[in-house]
Image (cartoon, rainbow, N blue to C red):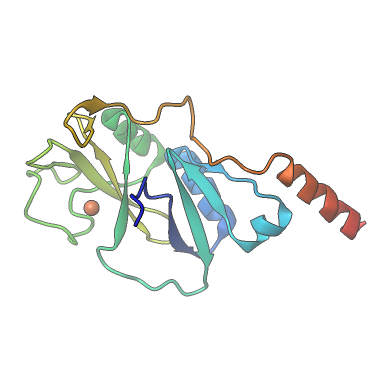
Length: 176
Ligand SMILES: [Fe+2]
């Protein structure tokens, strides 16, 4: 086998691409991943930190209680303040799905082993998202403190040079 480098993307069920894109851009700072017209029609993809969110269109999302994904934020308090300004509710127990740990604050908790701070929000299709922050940072397999991938914005996997531009040009020719 090969070692695994990282989780590359998660795929969520959505009912409205524009609503999803707007929400993830505004609330979480995601960026639209432009793959050219044909691939864009296939699914919506967003860049978020070092990972991607991919989507499955459906008119009838299957609700799966407690199923969620978690994202590490750089500044937890700043994120909570941002959620307040955006009117996005956040809770420690995710509407009662998770109880009994993390302290008494109804809006956020702390985990015992790492001091991780966490809270839960839901996207417009009720996909549950956990926001986490690890104050002790990240360490290598040999126990040395290591940095996360650093970039001013979201990182991206390198596309074939010129692919997107050519795809748009080709589409214009076939439409025209
Ligand atoms: Fe979790």
